[in-house]
Amino acid sequence: MRQTGARLIDPKESGRRPLDLPSPVFDEDAVARADDALRAMSGSFQQWLEDEVGKLQTRRLAASAARWDDDSLEALMLAAHDLKGLGGTYDYPLVTQLAASLCRLIDSDEGKAAVRAGPALLTGHIDAIRAAVRDGIKTDKHPIGSTVLRTLEARVDALGLPRR
Image 1 (cartoon, rainbow, N blue to C red):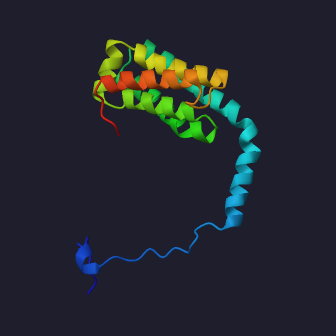
Image 2: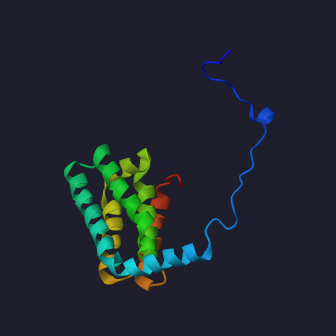
Image 3: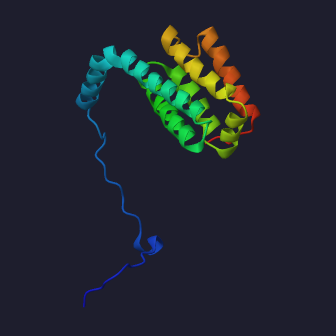
């Protein structure tokens, strides 16, 4: 007789299946090819990063026009999150750090309320990202980059927002 429907499986009784991956997962040739591909594309990184920063600025202007409503802040969050992931890849770890702080600011209801009460901290983050890319300030080892990053992060910390 064939069983139908869902069946409860107790992992304690069924045991764990071992993950059997060949070691290493990627051979040295695959890693070398990936490195070569990244180097070949690196000439486009600056333009791609500038395009992403442009999207962030466009969403900032739209959010301001929408009076920082939830939908516009969510769109802004998505653009900031993209930059958070791309900054390091495009050789701008400072952009990653600034975007991470911006994400933390607008990722909670408390942070969104703070932005609605006064958007200067949000706009300061975006202006810092734009300036870093425009002026080639790539890391927090740069004295201006370091100061701006520390200041913005301290302001977000002062709001008591959760870290995620």
